Image 1 (cartoon, helix red, strand yellow):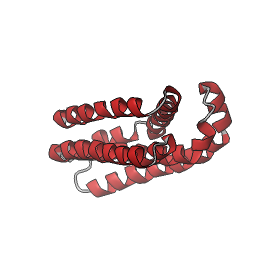
Image 2 (image 1 turned 45 degrees about the vertical axis):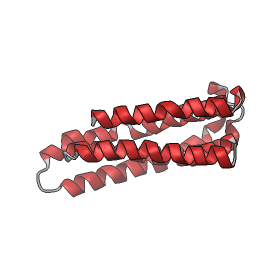
Image 3 (image 1 turned 180 degrees about the horizontal axis):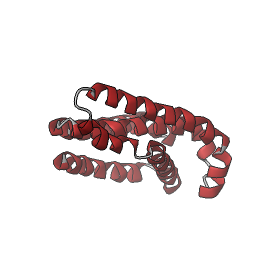
Image 4 (image 1 turned 60 degrees about the vertical axis):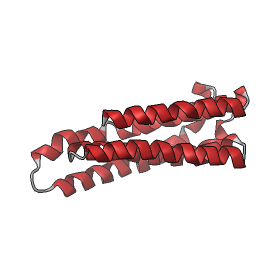
Length: 167
């Protein structure tokens, strides 16, 4: 598991190097603001719910699938509860973090927060089920696919919006 994260971090190291060379400071700053806000909210929405699997799964011997599905659906319910709140308070979020260009990315941020929050659950499931090889493969594959989509978006469209869509 640790080696997968290290390889993923090494691959992710090259994404900013490429983007800084191709975009202006303002465009790269918009990209980083988007990632900051979305990663902040995707971890906040999770409420450490994926970590609860470590407690509940070993206690339940015969209903592993039930615990995992309940955790997934609870996580999904939290995301669906979060979306209208996020939309209602988007103007306050923009003013707190001084995000002038962010209103253009509201729908993108909702997608990113929802999917990245749900993907947090997958690592925990692999660890609890003692499938560390899956964690390694998932981490590396996740980063490689993200890097590929970002590079394709950069070389074809050369816009920040395309890169954000590729995430």
